[in-house]
Length: 128
Image (cartoon, rainbow, N blue to C red; front, top):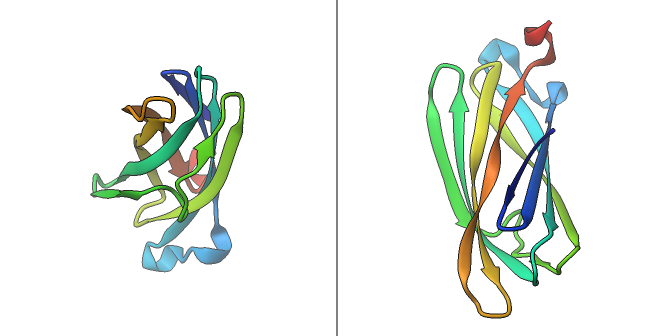
C-alpha cells in the first residue's frame, strides 16, 4: 500500500491483479485498486473531480478525468474515511497510475488539489 498526505487529506492505494478478467495471450491485464481517503483536515470536504495518468511499461500513456469517483462526489467529514474500488486495464504486465483529486472545502467553497500517490500494478509472477 502507498500513502500520500496533502493538506490534511490522506490517500492510500492498494492494488489487486484480476487474473480471471485478464487475457495475457491478447496482452490484456486487468487490475483493481482500492482507494482509502481519510479527512484529517480542519473541516468537511467534497471530492469534486479526479484526474488520472495511466502508464504501461511500454510507456503508453493515457489520461482519464471527470466528475467524482465511481459515480459519486462524496462528502467527507473531518475524521471520516471514504473508500471505493475501481479498476484499470493495461496492455503490459506492469504499469502505474497517479493523479489528483479536486476537493472543495465546505466551509468556504475553496477548491484545492490532493495528490494521489503513484502506485504500481503488476502480474504477481513478474516480480518473483
